[in-house]
Amino acid sequence: MEDTPTGLTPEDAKQLRSLRNGDEAAFAALVDRYHSPLLRLAMAFVPSHAVAEEVVQETWLGVLEGLSRFEGRSSLKTWIYRILINRAKTRGVRESRSVPFSPLGASSEDADEPAVDPARFRSTGYWVDHWAEPPGVWDDDTPEKLLLSKEGLAQIEKAIAGLPPAQRKVITLRDVEGLSSAEVCNILAISETNQRVLLHRARSRVRRALARYLEGGDSPT
Amino acid sequence: MTRDDLKNQVIDYLAGKLTCKEVTEAITDYLEGSLSFVEWVRFQMHLGMCFGCRRYLRQMRLTIRTLGALPVEPIPPAIRDELIQRFRSWKGG
Ligand SMILES: [Zn+2]
Image 1 (spheres, chains in turn blue, green):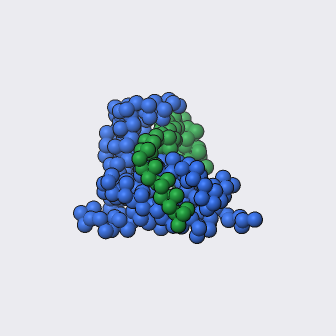
Image 2 (cartoon, chains in turn blue, purple):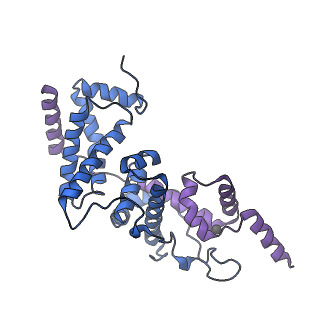
Image 3 (cartoon, each protein chain N blue to C red):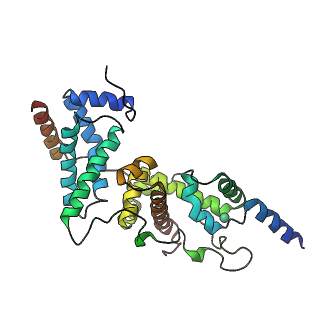
């Protein structure tokens, strides 16, 4: 009997056993599932695609090296992502003086930016700060429509890539990769509050970019 | 006091004068479940009365859903083969 660690799902535990037993198909499945998401995540940490590719390669080596020692305190996914982020951090420090790996935090880049263009709200009267120009109605299939159009997809990717670095990291881990708030705080070593502020700024910006594209309104602030 | 004034006062009492602008700033706290109970009640009250903020919340949820459904390119076969080779040598060594 294997011990039953807390962070592993039954599928994780099964996959881990197969990997440790040298099951090639299990490794191929892992690679198929995580390689491209890892590359996308790495792009949030390092300045170029080439470096991101290298970081992902190093991550896979790290996975192989750590496989026998992994205790299953987190999910397999979180463990792999943590390896990537540690490599990416090391890399980011080594890589360039021009693009320093900024410490995470609600720094000046994130300070006090309003979620919505203030011009959308009434500026005077009893209903001050209530909508002057309410948001438009988005259909339920907006995500599908956006993602199926080349231009829509490009708009989203541009919005994410254009975020300040700390915001980009948090939104990529939370909303794109689907990690929990606790996992993200742990991996990035930031407080819950800090994480929430960064997530809020990032989501607000991306929503604004999508609104601009979909409605042709809501100018940037 | 006019009828409208009275109505506004009742709304203020219930909604705790939460503005739409405040709703757009508290929306992540709301979605993350980190509002206090009183704040949460006020937020819900405001949503109940304000179609603009209901639309805003909907836009935010759809934004999050869009982010979660972003497609990725499949792994290039050459890289995949190379990684599997690594696994074989790891297994052997
Ligand atoms: Zn409102």
